Image 1 (spheres, one colour):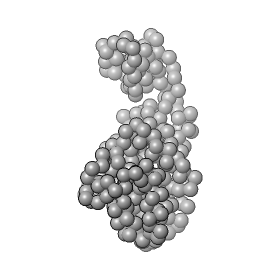
Image 2 (tube, one colour; image 1 turned 135 degrees about the vertical axis):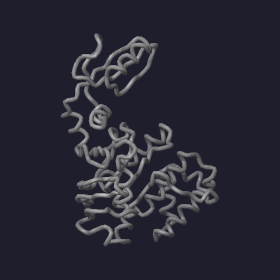
Image 3 (cartoon, helix red, strand yellow; image 1 turned 180 degrees about the vertical axis):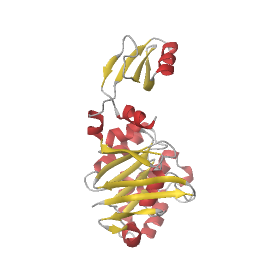
Image 4 (tube, one colour; image 1 turned 60 degrees about the vertical axis):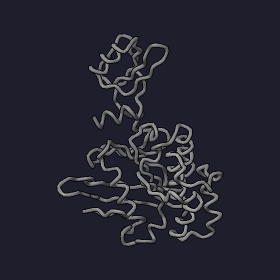
Length: 284
């Protein structure tokens, strides 16, 4: 399996959403990171054939995905950033409707499996308007799995999920990593660091980084210091004078991670840079 974007360009008027994307996706988990407006959702929509590139080509196993049409779309599962629902449908009814649209065989068995995967089988008869935001996100993930897709595309998949649901989703994604191409776009760096084998950092529609996660972190030359600070005044002083990535408060003090080529504070110690620091260095 190989999904390739070759010199893909997409613009709206004079504004480029993406500009010259060259990426090859193979089985595994790819995290696409970037701030709002970086081109993440546009890339996802093109890979799903919802939109077409202005220039360039997207191929799957060597064939143009737009020429493949329904044959290609039958191989993908998509969780959009904002999914629509029929509020008076139950979870079971909604998946049955989507299964019908996708031409799924053995739909009752498949629906039960997919609801089980996202831990919603026990509420299959509950109407979607009664679902929490996290439950709606999980039903969206369930519908994307109905056709056992070769390519799973997730746009901000952990939005609205509580910590336990986020962890369950990340474990689920990891369990598919050897048999599917999984592409998920997010601005939550920790989600990518936890499960993505490869990181793609987008900014203003241009690829800043496309590298294996471990290699990117281990080979970075960014210096990161951890400072233990006594009060909010010291924290604010550090924030005003240095680039910080994370602040953790405990027992009246704060541990602050600082990106700096020089020692920022008397008790600062060098620590291993994480993906958060690498991301901030390339985006900011």
